[in-house]
Length: 260
Image (tube, rainbow, N blue to C red; front, side, top):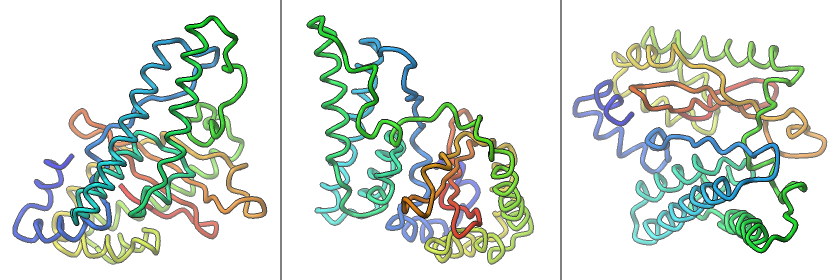
């Protein structure tokens, strides 16, 4: 994806854009492909547990690398490592940490310890805890049931209305209009990105034309009366055999782009 972005936003201004985006942690997550980590419906196999542990250990390694690079003053490198770690372990509870400079590693360590305990129990022939959900399992795993949500059609329509305005603004080279579809906390960053070379925006819009919804968080996890968690959605886009994700967040009843 980095090659694609360089081709779209090539030129002297591109280097300034990359330096600007580094601290914000934007776009670097496109270099990592999101793994398929759905929980098995029955007791997990040894192979599944081994593979899942490997993914989580890689996520933990990347977070530690981010901490190391941050201490060395390499903020862009640190944020890239944090984002790649978050892509490997898309736990909504860690989202804020993945965007901060000091992510909390304990949930990842707890998850690895839990999976290792399952593996140890299977090896000794003891009864596994697979029939009971792991702590934080619903929040950290992929939800295969999102397509059954009763409000899926309405939420998908609302997201795609904003997505349509965003793509149209890109095609018109309208940096201000495109940035207006972005969450307020990141609007200035995206406005600066598009303002570097607005004539390249239509090419980027073409990449987004094939985007398809790939995830929608549960409505039960976004009740303002019981939680501060905001509802999120992802749209997958294939670029040259690699998949990256356009992420959306619902703020005050309105879907806005969060990052890509």
